[in-house]
Structures are given as structure tokens and as C-alpha cells.
Length: 263
Image 1 (cartoon, rainbow, N blue to C red):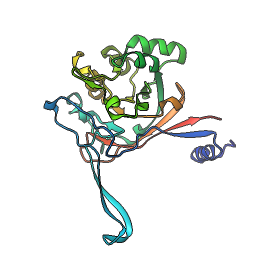
Image 2 (tube, one colour):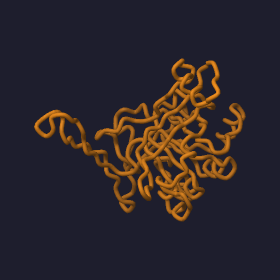
Image 3 (cartoon, rainbow, N blue to C red):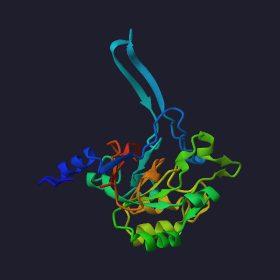
Image 4 (cartoon, rainbow, N blue to C red):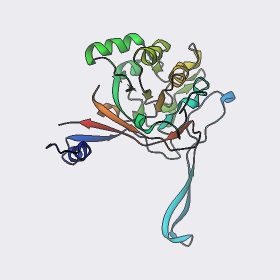
């Protein structure tokens, strides 16, 4: 790739020459995609619904278009700090006020596939992260930490949710891992292939839902329902994640793209 005086054009040239690969980390948003389920006292998130307005017919001969409705935390979505009580009083804490430069950041991908396959309640620990750093280098400040579990390969909604009489069973970070990422590495945010950034049984941790509590309390962000993390390197990719600009929005469905240098 021949460099120009404009680095933005260099990026476009790299994509055109297939030296930079663009990876879609987003699940398709449709009515069959399962919505997040929380204890009844926390309310209910609307599932995605699509209503056809017209499709080249007597309702409108030229346009095809739809109305849709869903909760802010539906499908592949972004969590803003205001989403949790610990982040409610922070500045720039909603989707309409987050600085736009925060929407482009490097990513570290933590491979937990084997552990999640063996134990759906697997918790990513601080020790696991430190061992990862020994092989891949220190987690950079203001980077995304993405927990790869291949959970997104579960195509059956029931298997993806993974409920039984005890509740939901999905992997996520342990309390000490969240503290380590936030307090010692000052990450930008945490991302998961599961339906929430916290583990399915995280209500039993202390504090309950530690990823939400510490990440959002520190003004950091969350991404969930990611996919295609198996196409990213452990380090070196750049993530573009821009939520909808909803006034006082606690979160938003969004398209998450990763840029990977193959040149």
C-alpha cells in the first residue's frame, strides 16, 4: 500500500487493496433474536418488532419501508454509563453525549472458547487476564476488552439464552477481572458475545452484576451480542462502535465494525 499525505485515504486504499479487512461484529436484528431477560423487578426489554408500511403496493406503489420497535438493549447493542445506577451522575454518560472519539478504539480479544465450552458459567478472572498479557502484551489504556467464547455460534435462541430452573448460564467476567480492567488498565469498555456483559449468574457475585457496576461507574462502556470475534487477532484490530444518538439514551442497537490489518 503506497502512502499518501492523507492517512484517511491510506485506510480506504488499504481496504480496496484488501490489506485492511473490515469484519462485521453485529448480529442480524430480527424478531427471532432473543431479548435480554432480567429478574422481573428490573422490568422488561421489548423484543425487536418489524411492521411493514408499504412494499410497492396499494399502500405505496414506489417505496418499501418499515416501522420497527425495540428496547435500547436489543440485539448487538451498546451500554452507556447512565444504564447503571453507578454511572447515573457522571458527565457525558448517555448515548447522545458520549464523545465521538470514544467510538473508535483498539481491541484486545481474550480467547475463552475452551473454558466456556467446558463450563457455561465460566468466569474470566484477573489471573486469566494477567496470563494473557504475558503472551500478548499489556492491555492498552482506552481499549476494548472483548471476551471471545464463540457463544454467538449458538443459533438456537434457547441455547443462546441457556436458562434452567436456576436462571441463565452464560460466561462473563469475575469481579476481580472487572476491577483489574477498570482500575489497573483503564480500559474503554468490555464486550461479550453473550446477551449481557455480565455472566448469567452474576446476580450472585459481589457486588451483583459487577461488570455493569464497575464499568459504568467508571464512565466506561459495554458491548454485547457480538459475533465473529474468531476473525479478529488477539491484538491490533480497531473497533468502530457508534450508538444511535438517543437523548438521554441508556444504550442502543448499533453496527459494530472491526478493522484488521492483513498487509
